[in-house]
Length: 167
Image (cartoon, rainbow, N blue to C red; front, side, top):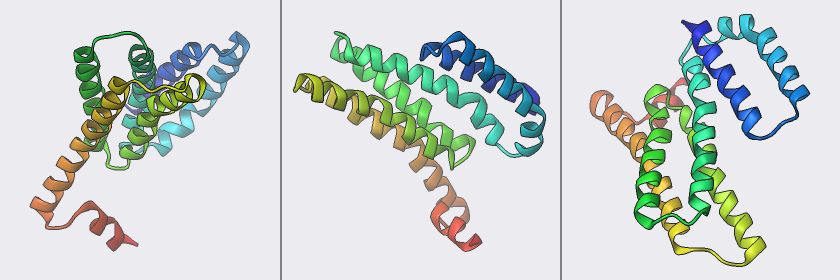
């Protein structure tokens, strides 16, 4: 099963390389390195890290699509729905593994960076972009807070306290 997750994640990374328009030779080299690392990675990914690895490239691809959608001329309703859906998808990484929120917030930064670049280049920010990013951040955080609430209800400790007691 770990090998299947690794293949899915590697396929996602290759699709991401194509989306980012890396040169063809770079894609080949990238594929070779992913293939060489397959055996060792499957041995090391004995936790839910392998599940995160299989999902994150596709979430990055979806976020890049969101960025294009976001900067285009779409209605406010579409931006609201898209922001909520993407936020919940990113936040759901907390249910796979709590440390997946590091990746979720890093991916959430992609549209924020593009909005800042647009502002620097054009000196304007559209209110619907601010609303979309705000909803994205809120709905990325919502699943994490749900996991925190469940942890505190069942164990009586937050994840922060549980992790700090291990140190």
